[in-house]
Image (cartoon, rainbow, N blue to C red; front, top):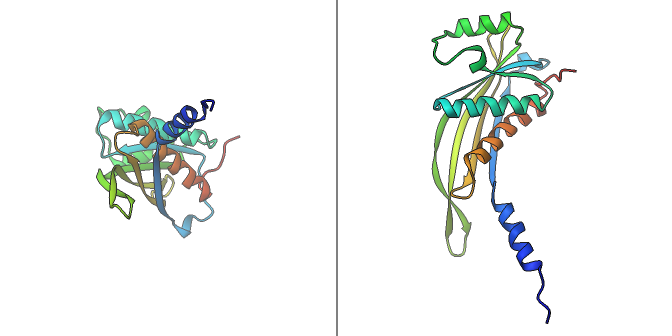
Length: 186
């Protein structure tokens, strides 16, 4: 019998499928008072994380929104982290610069859990997770037009932080688009 190359190929395909296995679940609510509102120019602000992670989240989330044809800017470009800025000052600067939305994300929880992969043997696999609360603030009114809770889970030791952030940021942008909160810039 002639050996086949299907087995090594299958192993490579399965290996690539396992890498980057991060998934994000979302629950969100759009304020009925903002049912017709959509946003074209959004500042992205992250909180509850260290500076390097904040830069990554703001950059990746702004990029995901730009992929939806929205003007998006990381808040660190507008408000250097070396300066104390009040919420009123933030909203004033955003209004002056023509922003109509502020997407604020805050890490609320992270850690590890076990996920049952085989009910018969009770085999489990470790999973890392990170949970964020997000809100899209209407700059003109200062009110939340949308709020969401997002939880990203990934296989421990297989998935990178970049995979986790990509899942979270793309899911956030997708959710805003599905809720018709983004008005594409042409």
